[in-house]
Picture 1 (cartoon, rainbow, N blue to C red):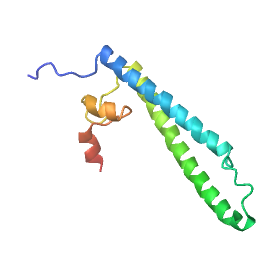
Picture 2: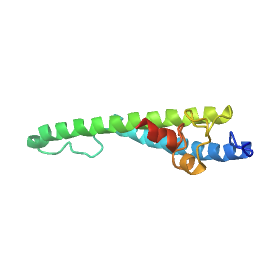
Picture 3: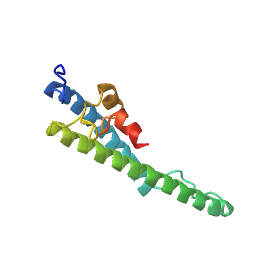
Length: 127
């Protein structure tokens, strides 16, 4: 018979993870705000007085930069969604439980990737 195997994190442990996630959410939302701001003000570098010969090159560069910022913003939004989902799992006390194995995900992994839903064991099997 197995010794008292832990099937979920304690309420105090969940509070600790909640604080970590809330902090990551705050900084992620700030970063998303900055990305969104830079998209809405594309010409903050004051290149209006640049000679016309560079204009075409600049337009291409600006388009590439805008696409890059859009990708970063999309990634940031997904990260925020994942963190918010993690908060829901904390509320219903399923946070930190691997959705494949049903075992607890080690704290070290959750501190590094607070929105993780798979243990490394399950994650490696997916590859």
